Length: 307
Image 1: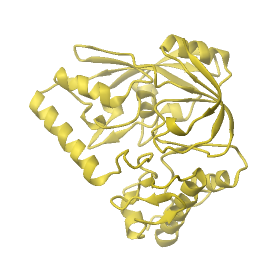
Image 2: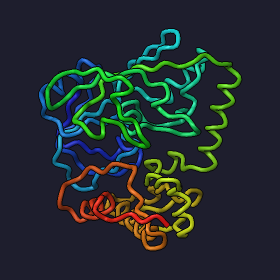
Image 3: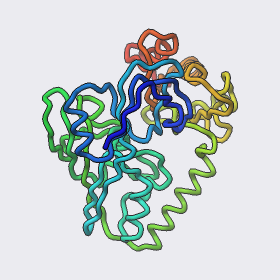
């Protein structure tokens, strides 16, 4: 049975460990429960493991569904069926046991499939779209369930049709290939070592990459050239090993993070005339000062000029 919480402290649901009180949060435990909640059309957001979310530290007058308790998945030969709340790293480990290749890139990912499909997650020359077959989604506008194939998904870099439409992922199917256990395992170990050496672990609360890579360039490279590593704002700091990560090193607030992000964004724009866009998602109240900065960083009205 789905648990419902009023005036819920959202801080510990986020890998950033930042957030205030939310009007209502509900945790469904099955796809059917999720669908039942969606049909009521009372909820503002549907989230997974909240691994790329920045919640406002102020009161959030919203109703939120969190799918992290829905961990349904199956493996039948080369076909993988997953629910929205299933963690990528758990499925990746099971695929290794079955000698299936295609999900090595998500080993160590803190995100769930709902979020990974939404943003077409990728790393190490693999992407969620590579092995995608189809998805069942709930269309909040027409109040119907749709089945979308790969051509329907409009997959691009950090983008899918879920970013465009009022669709909520219920479950998805993938087709992987058989491979050699040793090669799959070696690839996973290399990916894990890369994450340990280059990226902030969750020992330092963070939300992964802060900005998307601009076309034919790297946000991390540009921020590094701008000498942003180690820069601080309140309790937030740009990670010293990777300039495209912000860590919560000392009880940071959402305002600390967004102010620091705006400094990063502005520095790259000033030095290279490139607008880097946030990769993380912000949930807060419209009109707040931090929301205004967020809007500037996401505005398509500012002209991007490649160097």
